[in-house]
Image 1: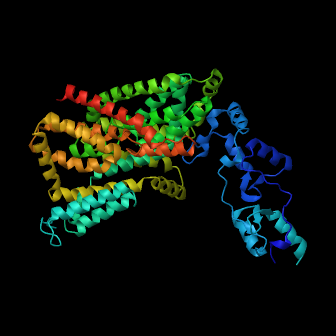
Image 2 (image 1 turned 90 degrees about the vertical axis):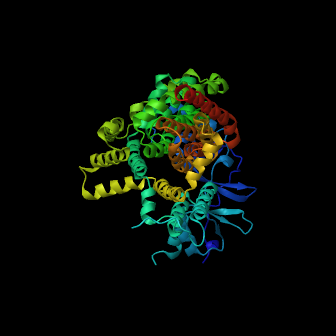
Image 3 (image 1 turned 180 degrees about the vertical axis):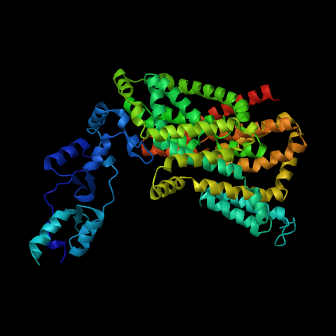
Length: 153
Length: 443
């Protein structure tokens, strides 16, 4: 059995790499999701995680390797956060360092897909042979499919 | 075991074999294709296998005073930094000048220089640079001038004391120069160089720096006490550091060596950290602390010492010392300046540690030509040139590359050529200042 039989999260729309981070965040909040796929003319580019956008609000000195271990001395830092939040309007998804996610195909066996979701995280993109995004497969959607199909077996 | 006689090795003279190993080792170190500690250890092994040295001579060539001083200070710094004291000092310094951008640059430069004088440069910049990035981010000003100044200050400050930079540790150990000797002879000119370096920095960047009152208020709102994450560790670390530095200052009358003092201090601090913990926690803490020691650097030193011992035994460095006397006509002042300027120019482009390791026996071999007082001046020339030369290019010192790496990851890259355009003339200026100092005081 392959992923062809599994319902994917197809209602997820992609954002373009030139979409601003503030628009991307707005879409995540509106859809109540923590991820949004990034596509260029329908071709898969990567996945923006809400954690990445949160990171952009933090001082870079705390995010980098060998950076500041904590920011307790800054206080609530609201004005610092506000400055970086306003900057989201002019920064784009293209500037983010998107993680290299493994991709799935429609003909990927379900067991392999389950293993990748277990190891690599969720959700993962399912692409067609041309690299265009068919949909996203999450752990929940796979388990829901298996629960419906396999029942109490 | 009898010392190895200088006989032909594999049919070749020991001098040729040792020089071949020496050149190959140094070339491999410069290319950075293979980790330098591996290269140095291989070179050391070849010196023994080829018969240039036997094992006893190889071990004798290792300056364990330097190794133990480095190790001890690494442990002490590794533990101390976890208290947050470095961040505390940097933030406090920023608030002392009310977050005024130029005042901030001066204070962070001073803080970096002082820390670098007492601790290793790389650790200093690793701790200061992130604070610099945070403060400049908060003030919404370009961090480049600040990071540039931190780089220069780390190398300048490290020149001032025995423990500030590995070349000084090596020179001090070989020449039996004390912590006080370095303070008395180098700290004054280092202070002048640091002050003079700030002038061009002010002219190029400083006078254009500005921040809004609102942004400065943000920085003034930082609570530096919040950066202290472990008050007990802070007290313990400061106690041990004060003890170790006092030991350095009084080492000569006490008849003690810096290596022993540093290792004892490290052991004492470890004891204070673990004495009230169970065995498993103790083991974990100590294992973790020793894991943070830069073994790559230590084994690099060990291998290097053996390689240099090899060419020294083969007579290469004595030959070089004789050539230097010929080229300079035995003129003391010329020799001092040649060592100063050549050290600076070489250190600007290659690692100064192998260079200094090679120059130490060369200067020792000049003791037949110059008086002890004059030889001591040559040591100062070597220390000043080798340490300050590191400011010449981005690859001149490890601390430079560390800051550049941090800056790159923070989105404010420090490129080689722009850095060179500003830093190289400043380095030349610092060597010119030290040239005047040498002339006024010793020549």
